[in-house]
Length: 176
Image (cartoon, rainbow, N blue to C red; front, side, top):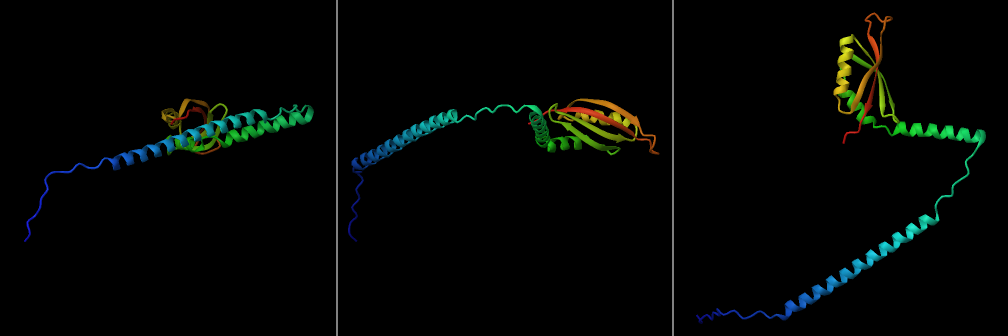
């Protein structure tokens, strides 16, 4: 067996590959930085042109239509706004809040929200006054509603069980 030659002295690693890698890295970084700067300048220029175009193309104000046609158009516009407000109501949130206040001896008859006032009127029937007041208290305890108050109530004499029909008004708030 031939003798083994062990070299325990480490030879210094050549420095030139590290310098080459550093130079390549700096070159790539410089290229990326210049492209980033150019993209930022192009974006700023595009935003400036967009603002300029928007200023130039503002819709011209039209003369208001007067007379019967104008009144009819305004009426239709107000009606369309009411329909839009009605459609944009937080229906799911309102129904979830009403379900939280539900009681077995209270029957909801109608729910009438008013989007502009953020108010909801609830018409319902309860089997007795204690149940009616318990329902109003329960509505007050639901975080979505505030300023809950009983607007009117009447005993239904035409029904043999004599339920109490009542209307409650409550304002709702947005809860994140």
